[in-house]
Image: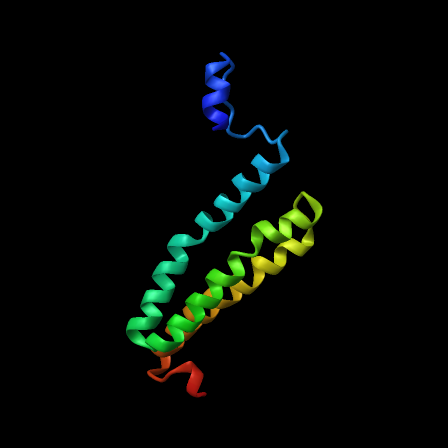
Length: 115
């Protein structure tokens, strides 16, 4: 909608104009979801195939639930604050667990969760 309004008024559309705080929050929410999507999907599916489908499902659902908190945590102060990290850092921990577990299995031939 914002793009259509800007173009119809003859002004150049600038995606990075963060004067509108709702636009900035939406832009950062989408960006935050997308920046880890490939890593998340590859790690989750590799974990599911080689280690545990059930564990992968639990980790994946937890990841999505926590990541979904991003816009709500941003909204608390209307800008990025450290509280927003509560929706990103646990997700990095899940990705690291998937990847470390895969590396462990490759190196030692056992499952990390059994150690």
